[in-house]
Image 1: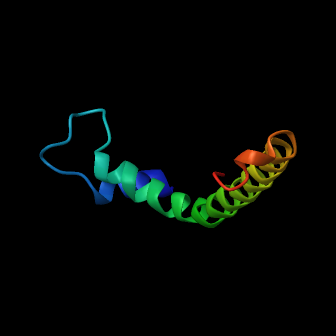
Image 2: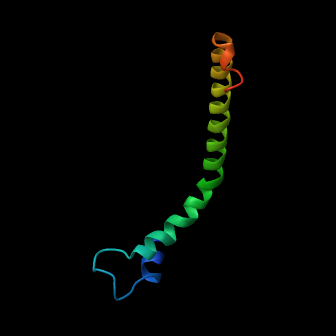
Image 3: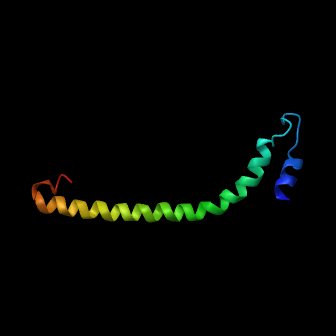
Length: 73
């Protein structure tokens, strides 16, 4: 019913018969994308922290093998 409503609501002269208008597609898609925004930010944040831990661990290993680089790093 939502798809039918979106197609009817966004009908226009620029619509090719048999194909829904891009506005109808966006009308249906944008609210669903909004639901994904927060989980996506949480995922990116978690990945950032994991990469930060890996970088710190790698840096510690490098410093232990080459202490002269400590000041440079």
